Image: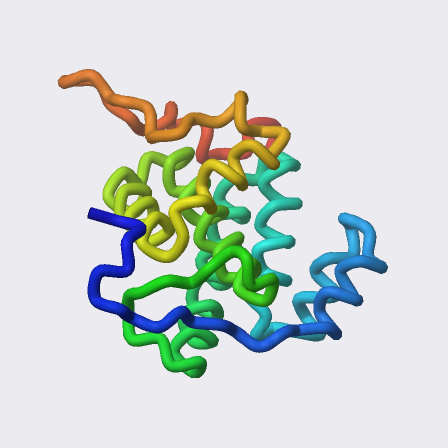
Length: 172
């Protein structure tokens, strides 16, 4: 069962990052990397960079940025007293950076076929706050374009892209 606080674990509430939210509000899509460089511990900044990169179709980079945001978020959660489980409410605005990074990593994992990671992150997000996945999927312009779950691979079908996808074709 997810979403219910059956063990009466306290909510984890992260501190605000006003300098990061201010910098992101002043920054265009092309300058988000500058915000990340100035605030490398911010999962919100990394999640924003993952979202921009994802919107540009750069899936592996989006995955990598989201993974950094996820790890920075885990660091922040632990520092705030989180013990590996329990509610991380979306309603507390400073928690949204971590939750957005988790969502971005979940989305990217689905798109590159990391089924186990997708399922683990789905469980993590639902345990943190069951409203996050539906909320961010509906907020995203990509909610119709990208699957809710990784695409199934038929038995005997090779899920890897053609080899040519890994090489830059052209003259030497």
